[in-house]
Length: 216
Image (cartoon, rainbow, N blue to C red; front, side, top):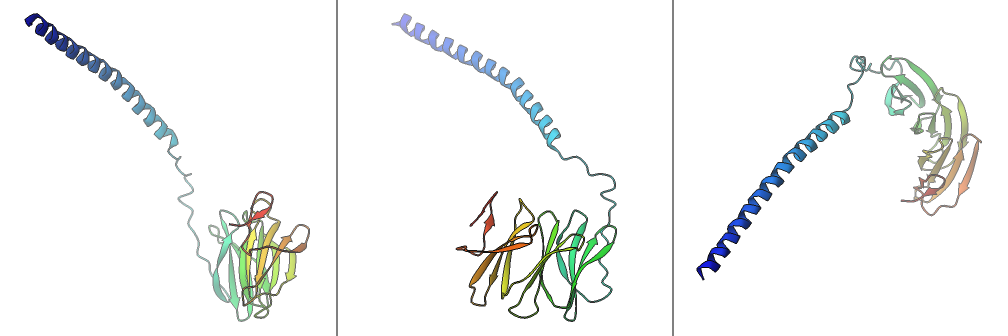
């Protein structure tokens, strides 16, 4: 009986010894692995940190817009990283300007004897769509290039409008005109071809896919 008990205790001691040695070996292996993983993580962090901006970026001060005539109506969008489009009204007349935020240079792009209701810039700043309102239910849509050249114009009646530029093809856009009761008519405008096509859509707020338009 004593021999059996001694043998059992010996086995327990041996098992405990094996477990301690194993734990020591595992811990010893984990330490270098953790150190190596931390080193890799530090290297990845250093590699992923953004580079410092150019020296002249911090020295570029934005110059405020100075309106010589009329009343500033608002900024309408970006032509590029430096230039914006803004609108000025003077009585019933309106003008659209481009403005370089850093040089202060500005250019008159478009003027109308009627109030400008909205101005939208295409995704890459190649075109500007201007909607003037000769009357409550009248609308004149004019597309110009970033240099002010008129490339398309059409009179479309409507109380309000929704515009969706094609992000894959800037010459193409969808326009929906609304009545006061929110009935709508949708059009596909191709600026390059100078055409407008009435569409039969089930929803006015269409979105562009890669080749076709779809709905949210």
